[in-house]
Image 1 (spheres, rainbow, N blue to C red):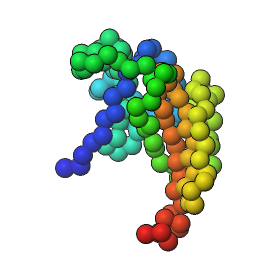
Image 2: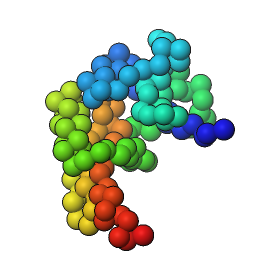
Image 3: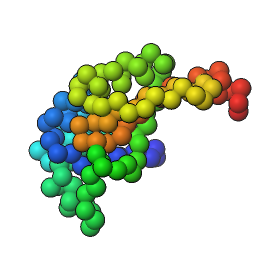
Amino acid sequence: MATKLFVNLPVENLAASKDFFAQLGFSFNPQFTDENAACMVIGEDNYAMLITKPFFKNFIKKPIADARQGAEVIVSLSAGSKQQVDELVDKAIAAGGTATITLDQYEGMYSRGFEDLDGHLWEFMYMDPSVIQQQG
């Protein structure tokens, strides 16, 4: 059985978050989407659960961190090319996200990052297979 990945993220406004990620081309699984949470399909067996903050509190004992004030994790997703990285991050910025960092300093790797509407850090990266194979 394949292991599925679910990244759970608290969001202030579920409708706005769904719209933001839909503008990047992501879809949502209606079977696991309601007024409290939305299951964003990242890829086969990979999902991000966008969960309203009041509902998110049901799953934790700690306070919800303010992602705009500190960083705990960067959700990094692969892309098929440098061009696709740029296209996806440009879409995120056009949809209301904030650009964070661009890394082109490692041979064969290119990445750009952004903050979503709630301050969560995301990154799209491209790793040139020909360079990776040479290093392996």
